[in-house]
Length: 390
Image 1 (cartoon, rainbow, N blue to C red):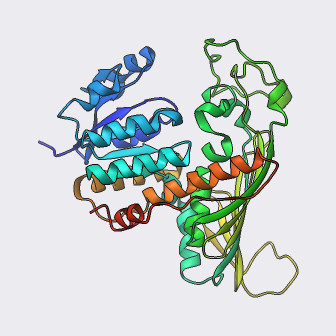
Image 2: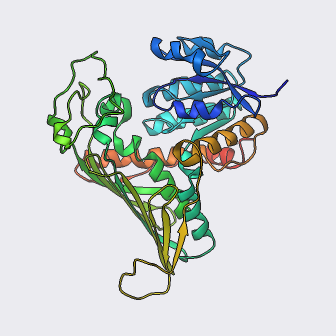
Image 3: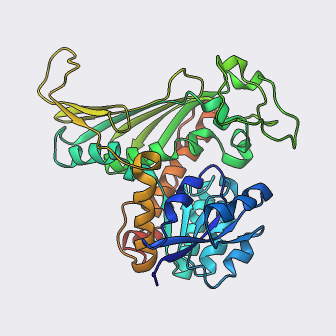
């Protein structure tokens, strides 16, 4: 007999890799139940997770006493209702990022976890990616001194295919891609800087995808939509019937510890590239690539002209599995947390703060770039989650 944690998965769509990482029979956890509204997805469950029960309603999954913990990987606008139901059912709950699509939704989830005493975990898997951990380690040991400014550029070559052909293109379901897509990066900025965003301003526009051909409502997505990409971007077809999120956005942040940061996102670049630059009081670091084979370079003996070889070059460690091995690592942390509690590298407070920064930045870019303050989180909730949810 094994003592695998029996996990129920609610939503087995685009983020099914996290469910795959959770299914490790005999090694700590097993997917024991799946709930999904899509009949084709449900039909695929027996061949993917042997012995798992299948439901078309998440409430029946939550009523199953043999399910010990829950993964919520449904569309973003449903996270609040489903996560709160799971927490109220007393099941340790993993919520895929972003935690919610408004500040209020996030705060409701956190307060529900606090009031029920049920453990809450948020899936910001980039904290477990090799490139992010390497940058954080270099900063922690003082290679660039104290961080004072961070810049992030995110070129999303497949953005039109991934985010403008389904519900992600509808701001009612996501708020916008400056929240939905950027939540990971904003969390990384906060983690590297050691602070949270307190004030933002932003600009953005729907520059390319607003005039491209769309599908009629209730029309299925085209076959191969995530395998066959159209180029140039102006040739994209079959977009979602609602497209009202920005495909270019840029935001400025002032953090509560004085760090200044900037984030830029484009969904029609020819190549996919995520670039972090951290400048501290004694140097600069920058990543070249974000997976195995990539590098983090450090310059800390200036001043000089630009030197591509840098003063130190650190290889991003090799890793196996989806998202550079992060999905497996984050799921192992969740399983341990669901069973035992204790400290984790991810943080519900940090997840809330990344959503809050993206949400207020989206309000700014739709208000002519006017600055907005990020609403603080109730200190009672901060203390509870920072204290390990005891």
